[in-house]
Image 1 (tube, rainbow, N blue to C red):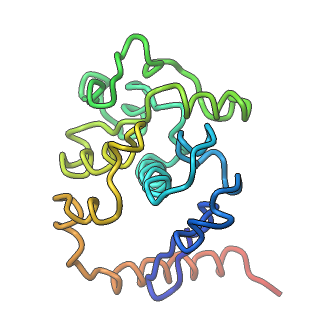
Image 2 (cartoon, rainbow, N blue to C red; image 1 turned 90 degrees about the vertical axis):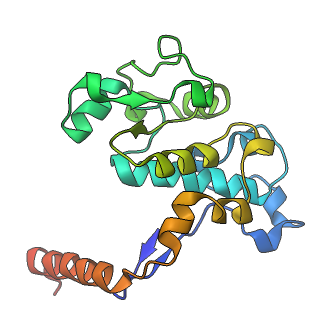
Length: 195
């Protein structure tokens, strides 16, 4: 993700571009840990693959770590400073059973070898965000981005119809975000001067 001092955000390097659908996009390039399950199993690229990558990136942004393996209820409680009992996960939403999915394992992405990680993406349930911490609309939006079956995952037009998108698409908070980005840049420059 690229951010500039004007508050503009750009997503880049999911490995493919929708302009390349009939060319290089069908080759195996990109950041494998963000690739959709169907791409890891050799299926052709579609925009739905980027929707998966976008959903995974959203989860990473809000929890502060790469979200595979899925955070446990204990980890969510620690991240957000709440009790484990307050963490409500929609495990059935993504076909998970809490006791069998690894949701309460204490594994972390640092302990997984790359092939173990890729196998997890393909064969295990996707991450789910806790309700009550995040709005129902946001949780539903992310859940739709992270549908394992590509035929169940929306395209960009489908995402634009989601309540979460509709609520926030008209907001223009780039000026506020730009001020925050500039404050981070200034802080970095003070703490790590160049030259």
